Image 1: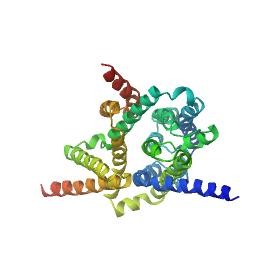
Image 2 (image 1 turned 45 degrees about the vertical axis):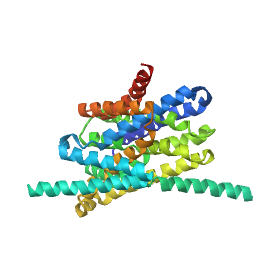
Image 3 (image 1 turned 90 degrees about the vertical axis):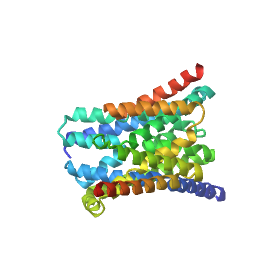
Image 4 (image 1 turned 180 degrees about the vertical axis):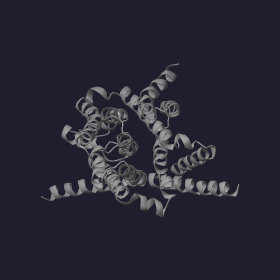
Amino acid sequence: MEGDVFAAMLIVAAGTYVMRAVPLAIAVASRSRIFTPDASGLLSMMAASLISALLVVSAMPEQQNLAPRELLARTIAIIAVFLSQLRWRNLGVAVVSGVAVYAVLRFFVECLEKAY
Amino acid sequence: MFLRSGRKRSALGNFVRGVEASFPIVLGYLPVAVAFGISAAGAGMSTGESVLVSALIFAGASQFSFVGLIGAGTPIAIATVTSLALNLRHILYGPLVARFLSRPRLHHALPLAFGLTDEVFATALVRLEKIDSSARMFWLLGLEAGAYLSWVAGTFAGAAGGELLLLASPSFAPLMSFALPALFAALLLPLLRGDTLYAAVTGAAIALTAFLLGFTAMGVLFAGILGPLFAIAVRRR
């Protein structure tokens, strides 16, 4: 790695840490002033909104691979995760169930593609 | 002395439970980290350099962007700013996690910030509430340690022998990459009640729109800001 690339990598690493650490440090330092019930409610909504956005972003296939059957397979697998979480309330089981359902669906899609 | 060793065991026990809780994250991280290792090697980085990038930055999208842009010959300043912009959403994570930590000291909180990735944040947010308040700090450290080690180890595997791994099992990586959305889906469900449902739906709509327009990372940041505002507006009507 050349010197300037190495320096850039260090800047990205330091910048990423600062973006994570400074708001956390401010929250810790001013805890009593910002965590009123209203603020807690707002933060809960923010958390749900962020995780929901991360779900959408991570579940979407690459732009060039937005085939309906791939989207359908992913949607069904996510529904399987929801059902598994409702039934067992276990994060590991829910994730493994989702991956297993997705694997089976992809297998069927590939078989169908080969057949037709 | 007995008390001190008991406290030590307890801290270690909480840390180990945190590591165990990182299993779903590890499941999702390994294939992505292997893919990053392969990309970094393809961009001309040695195995050591690839691992160093993962060890120091520990932010997937940002790392892919950095290596990809540098590899494509983009000016270094642009590659740096772009990679940093992708992590802007992380500024929202600290305050959300901090409210679950009981009387945290600054020197305890700062090491925690390093491992606050999307997946660690989401897992911590849902699970910390159910953990005894005195155990949360070490539990979170364990969660971060498990995620971090799998990320660095996966990068090493990808950089050192990733192409061999993919040749041996070409369909494995796409399947395992679904572990991350599965994790977010499992984490989202317990949060959906009352006003948070409106915020979640708005967040998803904003993220989807931004994704289709090609501004994925900014979409997550805007979702975090606009989702709650929409939910509050609905509540007031």
